[in-house]
Length: 273
Image 1: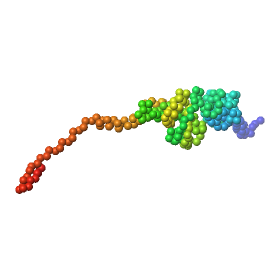
Image 2: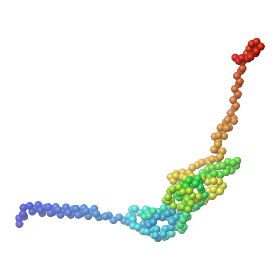
Image 3: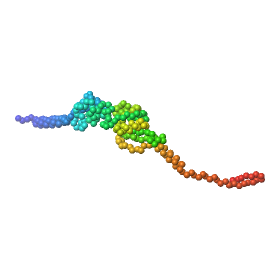
């Protein structure tokens, strides 16, 4: 049967349309198919947790995360987490890391902030010795002590005795992310070794101590000789000693006086020349 004129073009157009439709469908299907990435469950915080907080069931839950995004030290099970204490701030939705937990058996509160083998020691401060209220939990401080000199004579001795101590709390506040406005408190609790605790305890009773705020990125230790009261006036004393030892200059000799005697009648008078 003979096809009408132009029918072959319609058939060709239909075939091309079908091929194009199949190709477009295949392209769209390829692009819209999502690649299933491997995932795992991880423990995340359901609320903010401050340092020293005991972990409870209402503060944590399991969430499914892509395996490639889960930190290596993330906790993946709720087993044995009840009662554990966090040592640093944990944000809501953040994976709970083993490095942020205190050792098992640690009680909640200030003791949960301490690193193993260290002590918490509270010292009394005021507006001056406490850096005008700018100290906050988590800061690092150096301790200066002012003590009477062992040699006596009214001398006093000042020296940096401890360096890079971590502030655990100011007053009764341990929140490291709280309001950072200056707040004058009467006490500050520091994290110290047993040896540092002995030094700080003795210095606070035998003299006066003052805290100096340290840059968090400056871990180096300073080596100083300290200063005594007499050192503050050493320049003046040296100048006085030089003045006493210098030979006295001879006094200026009086100008030699030369004069002649003039006689006028019964009057006599002298005239300098």
